[in-house]
Image (cartoon, rainbow, N blue to C red; front, side, top):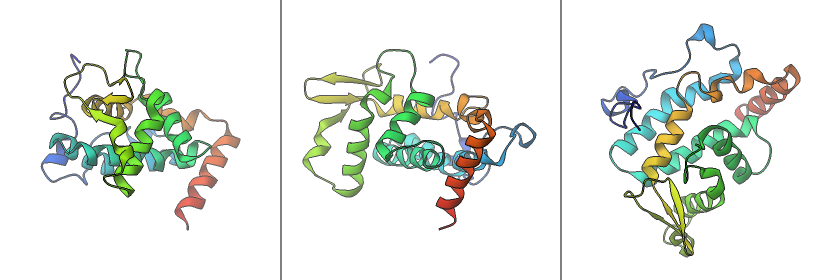
Length: 192
């Protein structure tokens, strides 16, 4: 995309070994609540490692990382089972209007592929999705197979974390009662 930073230009700290340094987020005075800290933490630490995986074309690792980051965030703010939380995040923050960039439509396939990759390497379910770096879309159905461009998926995920994108204000825009519920879910999860 013209005007958008490429993988090489984003999260430069990931490539030069300074991944623990903050890369981007809203300045502290613009973060209105501490409910953004899990998102900020993922953005400033975990996402730099995802970027390093993408920069080195380690797409399996990038997808595993993206999936883990999404489920960590949604565990506090989205109801439902992990695949539903994953689909919700993609739909709300990652999907784009152009054809084949609505990753939430194939969330079940990506989720199953990621689970198979992480837990059952070489299982038959791993063959329901193939990588195709030549296509301009993020994904497309080809008979029984989902053709998937992980570079496009990574770039769409990465854009969700750009400053002032809806992800940063989502929890602040909730009612005080909903914010308290989110706070309790995060606290319960991280205090175990």
